[in-house]
Amino acid sequence: MKLNCDMGEAFGAWKMGLDDLIMPHVDQANVACGFHASDPLTMSKTVSLAKQHNVIIGAHPGYPDLVGFGRRNMDILPTELKALIQYQIGALKAICESQNTQVDYVKPHGAMYNQMMADDTILETVMEAVSELDATLPLMVGAVPEAPQIKAMAKRYGLTVWFEAFADRLYTDEGRLTPRKEPNAVHASFELIEAQVKQLCESGTVTSGSGKTLAIYADTICVHGDGVHAVEAITKLRTIVDEFNRSNQSDYNSKLNKA
Image (cartoon, rainbow, N blue to C red; front, side, top):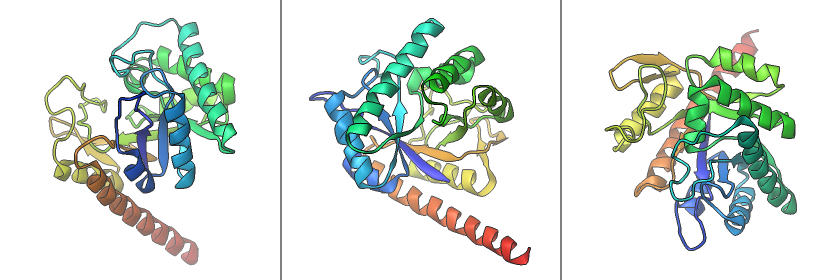
């Protein structure tokens, strides 16, 4: 199990997130590419920080919506959406190459991500955009009950998918993220966040807002680094995930020895 975090979401004089403090505790940095947040200098600094801490770098393309932070739905033609995605990945690739590192995966941001997970047509457009640019880049998608269908779709484009769950988001009965405009969509207490991460690690499930237990497979868990107690919370979640990974490795080694 990995931890990923959205990074580099400052813009000019506007600061957001605690990247310097968060980066040492995560495995994957989703780097904003300038459309929903960030700018060239911020992207460069974020790439340098990720490289310093041996964190792999993901392109985090979003809708062209700085004012709405990329969280407002947009009705975009497939050809334009592909171009938007490829443009942003290309920009981050160039910055990475200038620092002798690379983009390792793609994770769409905000409304683009949510619309992608709700509409197979949009998801296919995103997959096509990534595969045309570099089919070796895994696409990070939501860990949902329909995971087998998503894997089959990705296979048609020659893509690998990484399934992602969220540490601090409330799930609906359908296995989707509760819209942020609804009450309790984001867990307010660390106790709820900790319980959800433990449940994901230990049983591969989450509990929806109505109390329904949903089985979802996740390769990585998204944490957010812009809360008041973000650093303390992510440090504790790092411990939980590390303990789970060590336990899983011990079980795997035990099975190998018995074989």
